[in-house]
Amino acid sequence: MSSWSDASYTWYSTASDYSEVLTDDSRKCQVEGCHRKHAFVRLAGGRKVYSKYCAEHTCAKTYPEDEGYHCPTPRKAGERYCDEHLRCGEPGCDRKGEYIGVREYIPWFCVQHRCTAPDCHSRATDSRQQRCGRHVRLCSVPGCARPAHQHRDGRLDLVCAVHYGIYRCVWPDCSRSTGSSMRYCPAHKCCVAECAASRDATGGTDACTKHRCTIPRCPNPVLYPSHPRSLHCTLHTCRAAGCVSPRTSTTTSTTTTSSSSSKTTTASDFCPTHTCLTPHCTAPARFAHSHCARHACAVANCANARLGAADPAGALSPSSWRYRDRCEAHARARERRSVSVGGLEDIGIGIGTTGTTTGTGAGVAGGGGGGGGDGGSASLRDRFELELVGERERKRLSDDLEALRRREREREREAERRRAEVERLRRDLEEWRGLDPDRDRW
Image 1 (spheres, helix red, strand yellow):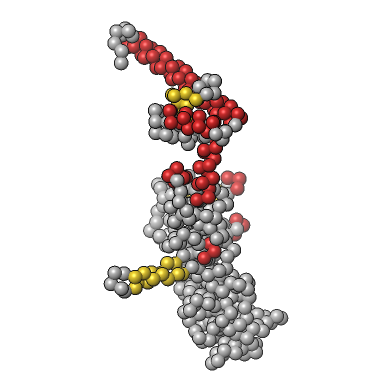
Image 2 (cartoon, helix red, strand yellow):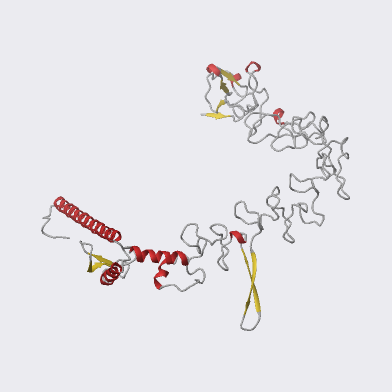
């Protein structure tokens, strides 16, 4: 077996009583009191490089091959490195530690000498900022390489101590530097990146007066700062794509039997243009100035409400209510079309093979098979006599009826074929069981 070092990617023989040289004590671990065999690692070409210590006492720090590869100092049991490589890399510091999860060895620095930048393990070269040379913050003034000025609270300024005060915030009683030609520091500047104005002096918001939501007591900035008509924040702007209008918020009054009026507030996530026109409905409209999917007419691009969503303007015949998913106008049009065309899905008809009406017919919508036969045929005959349907419509109705009969015959043939298939399978099963297939039927 072998044990693997995460730091150096080397393989060491585990502690055992076996060794290639059994009588040479120099091949044993040189730690006093340890009698395990020394560890080795195979390098390129299969050559072995031995350590003076066993796998448990060999430091995981490695050197170039010409320098012996292994660390000459042993490590303590349970440690990854020796005391020399666990010590802080700052000269004169005796603190010890290591970076957990780091595979390759890197010098360890304690919290007082380590760079404070996130995930940085380098030595802090700047004593004031306690950062390495790669993460030290410099003055933002062009051409200045001085480190940024650090305030008493530890916050780093945008400029160095020399340039600090040149760009000072003009907010009353504020001595912070703006770090640029702006008039206000980040604490008093409008939260909109493109805006250089100060925050609203009334307080309670991070935005300026121009970019603050116009709803009273709302501290949020507007949703679209670059849009001149955007006057509301995310919570108060219509959710319709590209709309900057405010959301709907209406109040209705009702009178109870005790003559006391109560107010009910109905709020929507959309503006009046994009809110359903049906009273008390706050769902989004299918398109501007229309109704929602629940209350809108089923006809595409129709802005009217379907029957039942609102009181109809006029009296409708009972047959018109069969089209409750349409508005009044489209329901009447659909009813007239069903009367003039005589759609088979709407009325019961009975037509013979010669195209004349008969007493027996297919009652489709009149109430089953028998309820629509005679009545449908009489109704159709009356329409023929009144010349509401021409010869072309009569021929089309005959063709439709013939198509229905043809499909019915096809279904009967398919049912007969399936019955024959079931019978064949039954006989095969009975023969497989060794029974007489004609003795008992299922």
